[in-house]
Image (cartoon, rainbow, N blue to C red):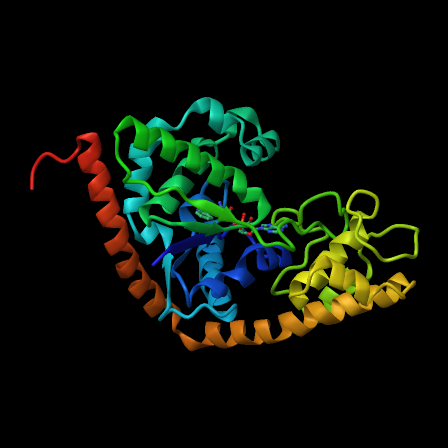
Length: 330
Ligand code: AMP
Ligand code: TRP
């Protein structure tokens, strides 16, 4: 059976961008693929974070996974740091990733630009190496992510070529990124030319926001001075972003969303329809999240997940050790 793997890093409050670009799609795989979905807590350490916040965020993400329909009987849900093979494979394969290619990664350039040069941790530079390890330990065929992560999956693909060629092996399977047709890049509501991101709270919709606050944020989303509702990300980024949100959450195409609103010439009415849709989806989602947090199921799920994931990951790690010459005795 083909394998699917993805993860989210517990670095802040999850946004509607995370939901549309990643979270809501994960459940679609669990019936037809062997699915591994994890919490990338080691990746969260690549930027400064308070320990208690990191712990809470990790628990939150498990609850979000379950609220979004992941079934722990079908999907292996686990914490990255619970499976030491991630760190071990990372140590091995860092030697086949090049400084040049890593320094060209957009995420690294963005994050390091915002920091004092002497205080940029090695981890943020080496971020994609650990991500390669995550993907390759499970022989993943498909990696569902938002658009901003596809560059890292491409880097993994380059590495797979290089390694398999060097050792004349096929130990690493060639993974493929899958981005959603609609909503691979949700933009900020306050500046629709920028990505909606956890570290930029202005213009974000957080999944745990009060529903009234969500409505208010959408009603005050930055748009343009026209009155026509159609998709044109270059000239109408705000309206296009709202159409994308509406389409993604309604599971329809952008064209179908455009058709729904083609006779409406009041942005206020359009925004209200978008807010209604977001609330229609997030209200039950928040209810499920709250029930899960109260229910005490998370520990058990993470324990089981760590065991199941380790079995698969350790097998790959052992093969790799043998291939590079690290396996000397029984
Ligand atoms: P992160 O928050 O960086 O761990 O991202 C988790 C997942 O959400 C990744 O697959 C990202 O590509 C996706 N994602 C993050 N922000 C957005 C956004 N604004 N639009 C679409 N997908 C996003
Ligand atoms: N880097 C991803 C993000 O920021 C999270 C992540 C870590 C991931 N390892 C992964 C996603 C492996 C997919 C596969 O969103």
